[in-house]
Length: 119
Image (tube, rainbow, N blue to C red; front, top):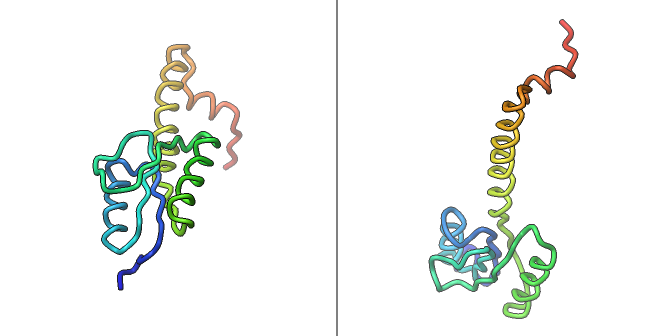
């Protein structure tokens, strides 16, 4: 008996990269991986639901489709959140700070100007 026999696992951001490897490993352990992504998965042997994790209606559709197919959900790997949280923050900082520097007021200056340091 495999570790995840009979379990249904949703992997957001599972179309490729780390998410796809997670889906493959879960399948090897007996799970039924569900790929929830904006892109079609690189492998066709997983149930796929086109999903935008930032849209409630899209997430409702994901849950409804998985429950209709399998009857239950056992595992969630929120892999897409990692990409949105990390890359979103980095890219936002990159472009906003660039604009602030063009204005002659770097972000670090603005942040430190309002802080009061005590020795």
